[in-house]
Image 1 (cartoon, rainbow, N blue to C red):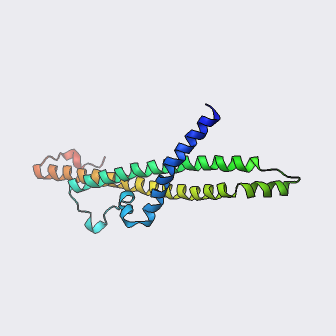
Image 2: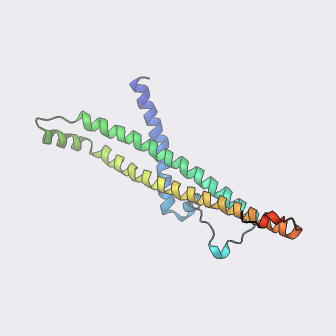
Image 3: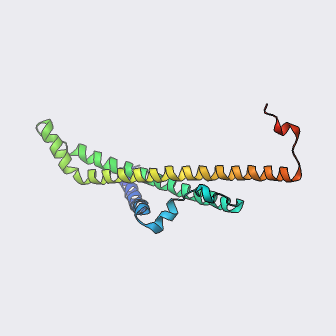
Length: 171
């Protein structure tokens, strides 16, 4: 691939990823957006939900996790692009008579790229924290569903008298 082609790809990435990163940060600031990225597991006093409500919870948490994982990937991709731009400009402008002068020139020239790079790094941290929270909620919802299904099977067996003596052995 040519350099011009790579620059065009980077521009497309930046045009696509920028608005997505904005949406990630708005997920924290806007209450309406939070519903798309944060699902809470019900508290212990209201956990007596039916299987259909738990199935809905599993689906919602899975969707949120998928969305959060996608955004975390987008944030990491943008981070890599900005890191490359910063390092390229920094190294290209590291000129001067001594190390202090070279460092000052490089930092001065790449100041804007550095600010973008650090801001994007913060967005990556936010996106990854959303992803982690969504993964935990999704796994917890699935565990709740497993427990409820086990309880339903046990209740069915108890109602129908399907127990065997071996069901009560401890070994």
